[in-house]
Image (tube, rainbow, N blue to C red):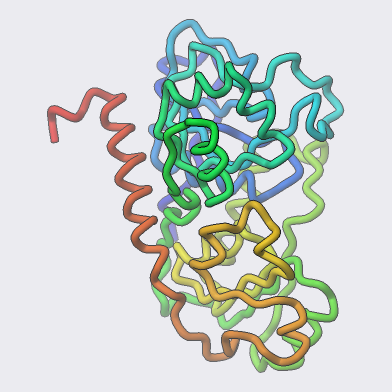
Length: 317
């Protein structure tokens, strides 16, 4: 079955006409690739992917509308882990970028760099900023940047499959081995382990192949009977897919990524699972909570209206 969110072909800077851009991760976290797919689904085919960590040094001969979303960010001063030298400038983006700032998470170590005087001016120029989580929303507001809690753009990825197309498989994604063992013991259905670990960019032929790997995983989540995971960017797409999901996290209150999102999904701690307290029966799972739907609708409207505005289609609606 044809998926509705297929990634766009990656085009070069020399291709014409390039009309839009979106942010692509440097590598090492499939959740970042999933967030790139979430942005790309709204954009036309003539879209260029811009590597997130090199966003500050991007050059283009005219202003280019770009969706900027996701986790920010590694720089020369905040945990650079790529074989290539870190760019001298990572943030803010240059004047040739005309951004939609939505579903952004500022990693705490990056906050001082992101919210320098120059960074604050950038955010204010293109606000209000859609914060992926309540931590980022609060930090931006504390620095005088207009902001709102947008939630995560992965809540909008479509599911082309119907419920009758689902596989009778429970996927466990990056769970501790003792937690996975308990789940296997309780399930009558087949339990299959998946992982977002081990993505070494040097092992792939290019960005297209990296994104394709993320799509394969998304396809499995779309058709799953149930998913139990420690990964935020497994849980959020599963909400969008209406795939019953549980997020396992030992201490969401201390995780800056979780505020505002953990409340959308059934969740528990590893200790809860070990004590038999799983908030779902994986063999006969009930529907997910529906609180995410309001954010989902707002995200779709915001990005769709922004794209139409940049295409000059507002007057035609």
